[in-house]
Image (cartoon, protein in one colour):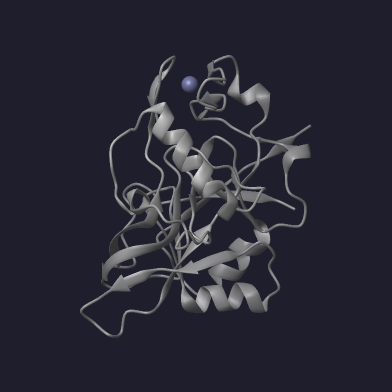
Length: 239
Ligand SMILES: [Zn+2]
């Protein structure tokens, strides 16, 4: 199976679609101020996770970084509601995106690069074609026009890893005070560690990196719905 990163439109490419949305996830863990490394926040978003039963209003406010003590308190509250295979880290967003939308949307949208949005017919087609790992959560968007189709955010779980050879030496080590994982800047030339690819899944994310990864099959199915303002870049893998 070949895999591709989903990216926004190519530079200079003419837009096919006018759609725009302004939205944020319903719940959010703030960044944290670590005594060793300073303020940090990760970029994960798990729209399928429902925190409506967590009795803590702070999670629905978008606030600046908190103290380590407050952060640890919030993580302990949230953790039982998050599937064990998903990380809970500073900066992570949960729940559906809520906001407004306008214009006409293509079958798939990727802007900013860490948010992939699907039109309802695209979600249905991916499911009817039997693709695996497609977690699409309906966005709660208000629109002036009733013709705006339902939109879904594609959840991408950080299951795969980049190959250590493409990351190189430029890493910030993990921190045992606040639990910050090892981090690195996204290498321009990159490939996956083959043994980390979740076999059989058509959608997944990369630990510590933004790009959303989809299978060749995913690309082929979505392209049947016509033009979209996204590009795909092949992501090779190596042992
Ligand atoms: Zn730390």
